[in-house]
Length: 245
Image 1 (cartoon, rainbow, N blue to C red):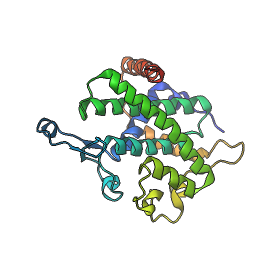
Image 2 (cartoon, rainbow, N blue to C red):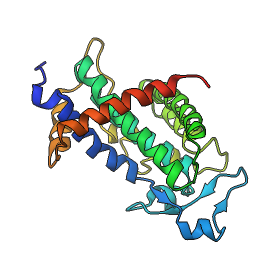
Image 3 (cartoon, one colour):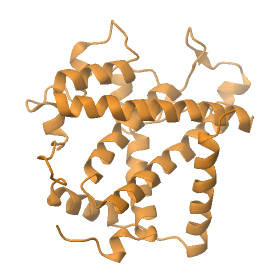
Image 4 (cartoon, helix red, strand yellow):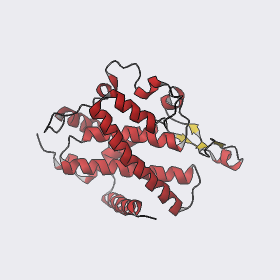
């Protein structure tokens, strides 16, 4: 397998490419709560107290077709599902490069999650945000195991994992929606291009090249100082997330 060049595996490329990929993931079920709604006390709340916003996703398929409410929970789980798909594809990278891509993708997600807590939900306490973020981190780790099991054992197990995570185990959820890509004859794994590599394999080289080509187009590099600050912040942030209260 050919090695990565310094240009495609270094921090400058990875930070910019993962940010561009993450923006697509984060927009899938995006929403917001306006200041007007907040100030006039018109924010809708579910029975469990979760606040409901207004969908601002480009297609809103998750909110309209799958009937998921535009909440923080929906946004986070849809985003994590997309991040998992990217994570599964970049596993064919060399170990060090894979870890670099994986961590940057996760960092982008948690930065955005904290921002939403602060801006959309007015959670001004940093300690409280950190507590919620640690809970999301635990969910992310469990989600990785659940979706990996589905990827290995088949579509039925994968659909069950999607139902538990994305649809919160709702018994009234449409079973067809659990497949996520209902109507695709090849099923979730085939439609998404996810294939379990043969024993001892590292994954398709073509997938790696395709991902790099799409991620690298149009990426605008930041100044070295800005990237260094982001990396320092990420290290500090990850340290805080794994600390116990």
